[in-house]
Length: 135
Image (cartoon, rainbow, N blue to C red; front, side):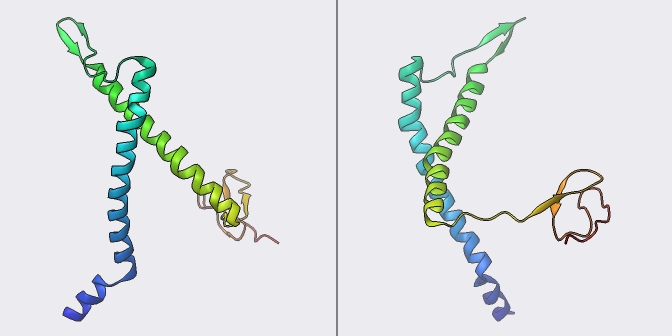
């Protein structure tokens, strides 16, 4: 049983997952710092207000704190933009320059539901129509 447990712990996928979680946590801290320390003050310099948490309105003695929601939406958009422009775009550019862009598998349309299915498929994954093998 101990050998089995050791084999489980040393399995490649488990170690890869552990490394991915640690790297993901570190990367999260970097992205959050970028957004909090650089992008949010930039937005505050343009808009003039760094924190919207105090924004509220009242209807029939019920107070709606929509400012916190605006902060969350703005933070999400800034994190997404930071990841896209500072990670995804540069990595895609480097991968293209190295000639390592993944090729897409060839697809064809299902004649019944018009969904995209692999050329080698003999049955549509969406409507289960039998397909003739592609030439």
